[in-house]
Image (cartoon, rainbow, N blue to C red; front, side, top):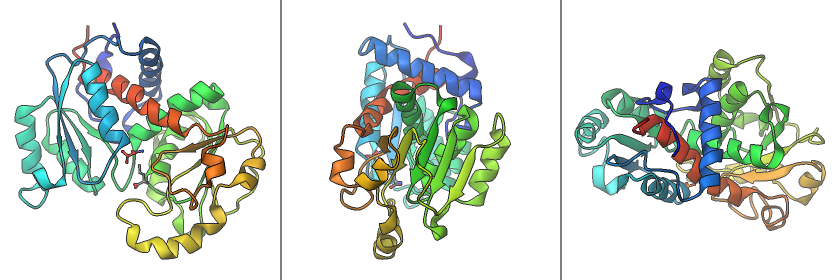
Length: 312
Ligand code: CP
Ligand code: NVA
């Protein structure tokens, strides 16, 4: 039986920065132990019902949450864009107040981070961020589990992210601040992560923030992981032509991986093969992308146990 930790019970998880370093460690440790016990994690969500709201498409997030909730003994209702029509049929706040009367927690993938903050403010039940335009903290929890599995202690690692300074990067930067790994973010000049992301990371950092931003695709020799994501995130599809031009020099191909001889290859998926990554790299022996996808399940099961679990 996996024990719940009281400090996290009832809390929201909107960003990695909502945790402190010790709480992040608890989530990761629990994720590793749940992975070890496999399908027998106990039933901490017995009698709990979770609503999932999706304003954008999803494969991994939807399935891993639904499976995770079921394995923990809970039940879920998944609502698509057409069902609730947040901000169209009713305000975000009203929708949250209604859900609050029915369910024990809300997992939400919303277009706007601001709407997620409003949802969380209007709900007394825990709200979990399943991706917004600002961040994707559940993905990064799974990424940290994966990095520990394949490369050991986080604080000894040098993660290099190459591509768009997007929601994945914002969560990686916050993770670097709490877990103490070095993170280099290499983007075309106009696609750097926002200054406010770095400010927030500085404010939660356990030591000096080890995040470097550059546009120079060099110095990969000591990288323990090379991480990329799509060049145009959901909602930015109309910018694809301009982005293809700006990002072309930042493709992860065999030459890039050869300049990082110790690194694994990471991608949150879905991948656009032939754009940000070549088939050779994503299908190569150093690719851990499907481990990342698998670990969504365990990371989220750990998170839900701590936030929503019945406790001991
Ligand atoms: N990585 C991830 O969140 O995938 P989905 O968009 O398919 O959920
Ligand atoms: N940055 C991507 C991540 C998808 C999981 C997006 O927001 O579309």
